[in-house]
Length: 197
Image (cartoon, rainbow, N blue to C red; front, side):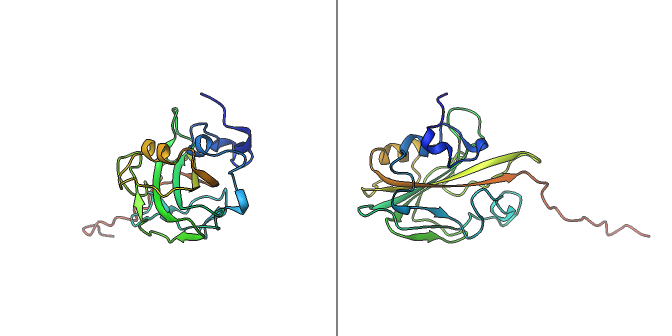
């Protein structure tokens, strides 16, 4: 497996440096953060643990909110790919594929349904809730790409289809990482109504 490119190394914690990340394939030193293009979240800082409300550890979990600055002029559309960089294998596990976002400053609200979404690693077109084993720390990498062409992909496309459709058209890219450590699910206390003192 090849090493992650040098221009990306400084932007990722050591545990998140999977060479198969989409940004390693699609981005380069010139496009990363070009023109101040940046991806942030009002729910967590870069490198801060995801709240369980965005994971499989809570029953009503949803996708986290995200915000981004304006991409460079000429950007037509924005594409979001979220991957688990601690996955084994050549490709990290895909948690979210989103496109159809306007090529301008914007945001996705907590739990908002995006304009277009593709198939995650489980074959569903939605946010794949992080669910690491108890005590295991995983690194989730949120990757945002600005493209100079609008996409014609239909909803439900695969990661491979999405990556192929934007390759060579990236005007800028940005990255945001957030770990999550597996915890016990909060099942509450079960009471036996027949129990007596």
